[in-house]
Length: 213
Image: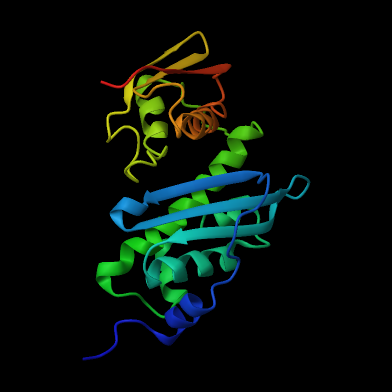
């Protein structure tokens, strides 16, 4: 039986480029879930004058394809303008790796979405978003789907940790079904605030904890 991975995939898997975490990144994106088998976090440092990616690193939790695509995506993005980096496609990543098994194509999609999420995070934080969607309950929910519940590895929406959320006069309020002194309460609060405070029309994020059911 033919081995499913190309030599280039194996090379990036064994010796991945740009692995790690950037301290105080200008942009950060996380896609996927370790509970589902694959997850990618992408961190950026951006030159504010030229709007080019000075440094990019990634953390990957998953299979060989997941690690290899994270590696090649960061190689493709480094040194590019934000505009050019946003044009990188999952097909381009797959081609750079000499192809991926069809069942693993989602790994390249995940890496590309992680990069785009990090770029979007940078643009939102620096007022560079041109198409400004008003923050609605649906927007808040989509953002909260990227906040992980450390108890399960799934997001806090799918695990029903969010009792309710609301947005009024620029204030987002999220009620979380955990006690304030829970070991993961602080981490969850920080991640919720991080995901929501960059939205252009959000002035404040309030996270309220309550005793679990």
